[in-house]
Length: 151
Image (cartoon, rainbow, N blue to C red; front, side):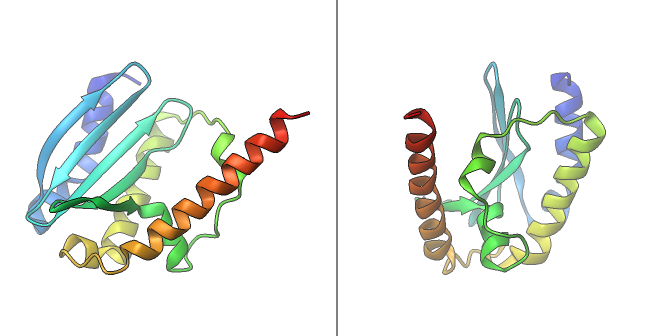
């Protein structure tokens, strides 16, 4: 997918953050295999991340405390909407068409608006629980790597 098409899809999908919730575009960072689009309001940083071979994902952070951050994925697990991932999920590669990419982003935007309004409005009280889940998963992934590389 070309960079311009990627930018068009992200901008179109997250237009509502700007028009309805006071977000503005922040920094956009490109590297050879990844990119990140940042949206900011007075309390919250929502960053759209994409790495080649994976699905796009949203990071959510408190702009006043950079350590107070997690992902929409962990919010969806915490809310019981999606199952907790297994370590093997972290190591799978996928290829998304432009249509699939746009669909994934649209789903994540809808989930953010439905389940993440506390964060959008600056209430980060749930963030420690999400961070605990992420830390446990990172340890599980390290164990998974150790088991599968020792053979």
